[in-house]
Image (cartoon, rainbow, N blue to C red):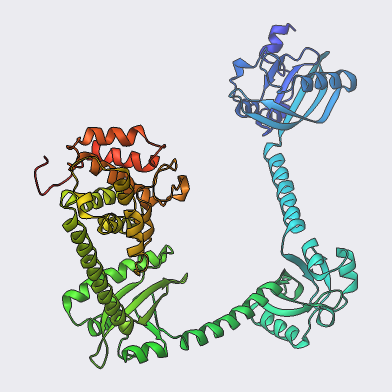
Amino acid sequence: MKESDELNNPFKHSEDKFLKIFYMNPSPIAVSFAYNDCFLDVNASFLQVFGFKKEEVIGFTSKDLNLFVDYEDRKKAIELIKKRGKINGFETRMRCKDGNILTGLLFADIIELEERHYLITVFNDITEYKKTIGDLKDSESKYRSFFENAVEGICQTTPEGRYTIVNPALVRIMGYDSPEDMINSVKDISKDGYVKPEDRETFRNILAENGVVKGFEIEFYRKDKSIIWVSINARAVKDEAGKIICLEGTIEEITKHKAVEEQLKYEKIKFSVLIENAPFGMVMIDKDGRFIYVNSKFIEMFGYDLNDIPDGRTWFKKAYPDQEYRKTVISAWLDDLKDAAIGEKRPRVFNVTCKDGVNKIVNFIPVQLVSGMNIMTCEDITSRKIAEDAVRQTGDRLRNALAAMIQAMTLMVEKRDPYTAGHQKRVSRLARTIAQKMGLPNDKIDAIRIAAAIHDIGKISVPAEILSKPGVLSDIEKKLIMVHPWSGYDILKDVDLPYPIAEAVYQHHERLDGSGYPRGLKGEEILLEASILSVADVVEAIVSYRPYRPAKGIEAALEEIEKNRGILYDERVVDACLMVFKEEGFIFEYDHVLA
């Protein structure tokens, strides 16, 4: 027989029965020459599983078709055939035409037909089986990991109450050395576990009725007989006849939780007592706007109880009968509750109409709770507001009196020194502007304004003819002039003023390098208020006309302070003064034309 004839039909002399088995077998079967791996025929299952057409297989080897995923597997399979004449369940991976990988078992045997040796190979696909086995192993591994590493205790017991399986977490919770120690030590859970035997009966009854027990909280003995609180979840496992064969479930220690729970109960009682006896009114409002609680002080303060104001709508209508004012209050109230939700507490003062018609001034503070409830505290500040108004009116009168006194002092100086008329007023305005530019607090700015307005009050002690002398002063006259800061201090030191005005007046001719008068103070010994006053005084004096010289102008004044910046005058003050003139366009205001 020619080899070409065998390629076309190697089984033409075989029995029909064999051919039927070969072609209709559900497993892929291939026939090849025994020792050169060249395919002579394959069945329909082979073509279907591996995705080839018959003409793509016949006459080719497994190597040609790239069937084996691992070259070493093909090599080993050939060696087994040569050595043993057969392959019996060799596991390997085979590649389909589309690249899909299958795992299977190879079975092969050599047969002799008409004095020729042929290899019949059968491939059993076990891909899904291998995947299933892998999934089972993975599932078992995950379950084992969960069981061993669970935080909660996991156990299985007999219906009579003996442990059969316990995990490490339960061993730790109950204080035993190992699972074996716990299983062997606890003979009866009713006696060795439950602190109260009646709890075991309750557990049994719940289980019998429902088949499961959830969140059953009891006290339990540990190995050392110390007591802990645990929460049990359990179910009964039954056989086909409905008989309970075991119980399984979880046990979680909740000792700390129970302690916190008890503490919360105590805090709740304490909180209730505090609210009820608080010195201010309190109202609790749910998320739907219903008033669910008002304390005694609230009722005492407004006269309304929960029957009078069951909800926010009723409260607003009764407490704020004026419709326009009510709209304002509601808007503010809603804004405040939103702010309270993010932790901001903004007090609000509203006028409230009480049940008896009396109007009260009330301070409200909103507090939003985690549960969505809102608490509003209410403080009656009617008396305090009346007192504050009285104090404010008194303060206004005192400030007006102080302003009048300062004005009188200013006029008194200017009466004696007409050539410097308006000087103090202009210095005061410039000093205040410099202080504002430096960002000083309002009270310090006010102190500087007042001190500048009366900084030359000491000149009342200087003879008028010296103040208005048109010529150059003699040394004695200069010394008399230099006394005026001390005289001003002597006049003001006993006046009860809220700021260090007397000291600022005393120092307004002092200089950083100690060349000033009357005390020759240096650097930080000089008040900031006095430093500002001295710069404003120098600038105004240079800009303005004097009996002994004409006005020099603003350029000369700014040149003077800039040249002596950090030497005679405070650097910060000079910088602020320069900005006031150069950037903001400050100008002096005169009641007369400069000579």
